[in-house]
Image 1 (cartoon, rainbow, N blue to C red):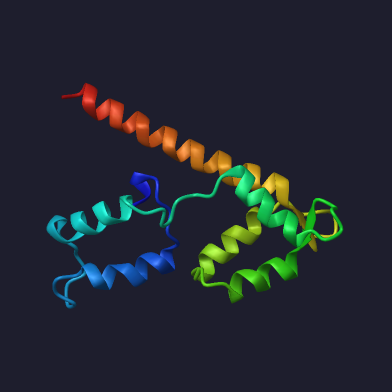
Image 2: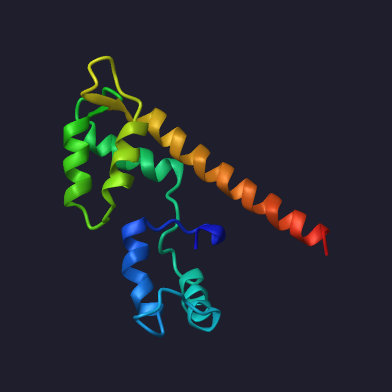
Length: 138
């Protein structure tokens, strides 16, 4: 899915995988099972990365003082209370990546949004490069 530009969390992948398994005793998914799911997925906006403006709009709604920062503990609680389910390792990596202020209690959300967009763009560029290399080798 990530190769196709869709970015579910690992917890979401773990929720999807059992539905694609032919035999619950084997942890492999056949192409015949995954292809229809992926084709249906590509017709939706599920797991699409949000745009810069969408992310900024969301964070600005949380920033009542218009300070450019959000309290870290509030953000963590919102993540845990949301429908997005993250594995503990994913949550930890996300929190570690937040550009925090000197106190470590707040983070600069615009810097974080730039990081997210940059990471997604680099991923997509690498996928396209791999695709071009594989086409050139044929």
